[in-house]
Length: 324
Image (cartoon, rainbow, N blue to C red):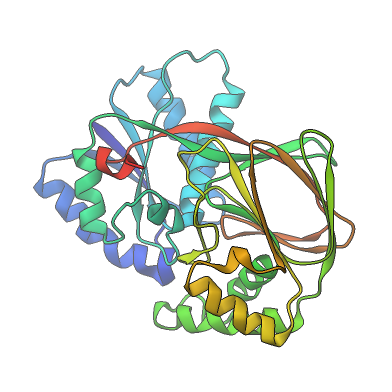
């Protein structure tokens, strides 16, 4: 095998820059064939992934694996580059090049969903031990306003969680690993205090609609976790051909405390102001501008008219990690 590794040096508060020399030493010690590429700006991993796939397919490379070394954002961009490449080159009839992951970021929710170790050496050992790719479900969305589309590995959020992402990303201490957790929870508190509810319309494949006039947190998720390990949808799985939708209506202060307590017990879905369902296809529409996020990447503040479904992509994960 030859591993094409996309390294994000700034992942996890510059943890990527500190960890890469150790990863490289390990690879050289094991005489592993690899090539490293380093991201330099937001979105760079998309272009790098497309560049790698262009090289691999042009030479008909039979044993290539594309590895995202970073956090969920790096992995998201890597997947986006792969999906974009194969969409733009439909004539390619060779198997899709699988994606592996080295979770050296701060959140690493997709690694949790795949049961991949979050220590780089354990994760790398499992990656190198892999023998065959596993098809994993990913989220696919279509913006109905302009018929553009995109993909997500973790979740597509509107409202509270997206506001937290916005505030955390613009925190002055975000790039300092020692204070990243503090910045995140400060952003959570600020978002809970300032975010406003909005009207959400959910449309199901049969045309049935549900309206939530005071939606506060809206998350379409591909697996159980969001926000760095919060178990928001306990029954969701990348191995199910469905996406899970969680809608939390604006809670009172007492309900917030109850929600947090029940969340820790994984019983929050029983609360009357929390709504949940799984589906193969559905559409969400808002009539007010709110922050949005995809896999921790900001979408800005806007209205949404988006439909959701699942697609698949091969991932290079150890067989035991694929057990479900």
